[in-house]
Length: 483
Image (tube, rainbow, N blue to C red; front, side, top):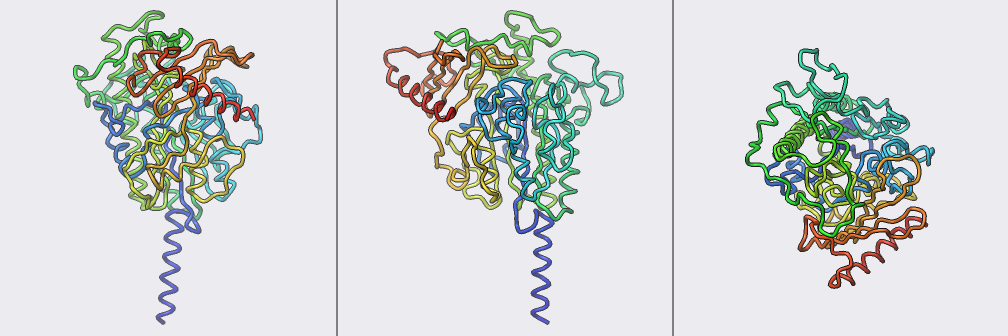
C-alpha cells in the first residue's frame, strides 16, 4: 500500500510539472518585445521613469547594462534578433525586405523551438515586415500570429467614435485622454497574452510565447493617468542637445519620422515646449507599457508557471528625444544602439545582480536555446549568454557592433554603411563607402569622460593608439562576418 501511495504521488507530481511547464521538465519561454524603448527605465538609472514592473523583473533576473541592437530601426533589428544573424548576413537593412527573400529556409528562434516540440505563439509586433509580409513569419508559429504589424498611428482614440475606430489619417505625435487602458493596443495585447497563458496551463507541451508591445513607439499615446504620473516641470531637458563637436554630417539625419506628424516642423528644431511635451509623452508611454508587462507577469505568477519559465524582455533599439539635435532612431549613437535586456530563469544564481558584459541582440537566439537545453543551431552570429546568467561578472565578448546605412531607406545595396563598435570604454564608428569599403568619415567617443558622445575625438593625437586598435578590431570583426 505504501509503495502504491508513493507511486501515485510521484505520478501526480509529474502531471503537475507537465501542466505547469511542459513534459520532461522542459522550460517554457515568455519573450516580451518592446518597440522603440531606450534605457529610460528606473532600473537603468533614469531619474524620472516610473517602471515598477520592469524593475521587479530586473530584481528577479539578469539586467544587461551594456546590451546593443544590430541596427536602430525595427525590421533589421528584429530580423537579426529572431534569426541570430547580423544585418549584413541577412542582407536586411531597411523596412521593406523580408529575411526569407535572402534565406527562404532559415530557421527562426521560435521555429527552432517549434521543431523540437514547443507550442509557439506570437501576439503583437514581433517581426516587422509591414509592407512585404504583414502577417510576420507564419512558419515560426504553431498558430497564426495575432495583432501583427500595422501602422502605429492607427493606435489612436477617435473622440466620439466607438472603441477601436481607426483614424482616417495620421494625427499629432501624442495623445492624452482619460480612457481605459484597453483603448489602446498594448492593453489588448496583454489581454490576449493572459488568455494564452491560461490556455498553456492546460497543455501538456512546453510553450514559447512572444508578446510584442507597441509603445513607446510614436505616437506617444497613453491614458491620462500615465501622463499624470509625471510633473513636466520636474523633467529633464535633453542632456546634450547639440550635434557632436567635430562630428561628420553623415552621422546625423532629418528625423522625418516625427516630422511626418501634424504640428511638427518640416525643417529646423522643435520649440522647448514641444520638446518637453514629447519627452513627457515618451515617459507616459513607457509607464503604460510597463503596466501591461506587469499584468502579463502577474498572470504568469498566478498560474504557478514562473518556476518553469524563462522570461526575456528586450527592446528592438533605442531612441533620441532631442539629444544631438535628433529625434527617433536610425543613427549609430549610444542612445539608439543601447537597448534594455533582462533575462530571468528559474532558480538562477545571483538574481538582481546586473551585468556589465557587452552583449548584442543576436545573442538572444543562442541564449534561449542554451538555457532551455535545445540543440544549438549552426551558423549563428551570436553567442550564448548562459555563462553570464550563471555569473554576472563573466564577459562573453569585448565589443558590440551596431550599423546603419545612409541613405536610411532604400531597397537594395546602400551607398554608405556606418559600422559602430562599442567597447567597454570607446565607441568607434566608420562610415564606409559600400562599393569600395573605404571609410569616408570616422567617429570616436571616450565614454570614460564623455558618456553623452558630445565631442568626436577621431584623429586627435592623444587617442591615436586607441583609434588604431578600435579600427583593427572592427576590421577583424567584419572580416569574420564576411567569411
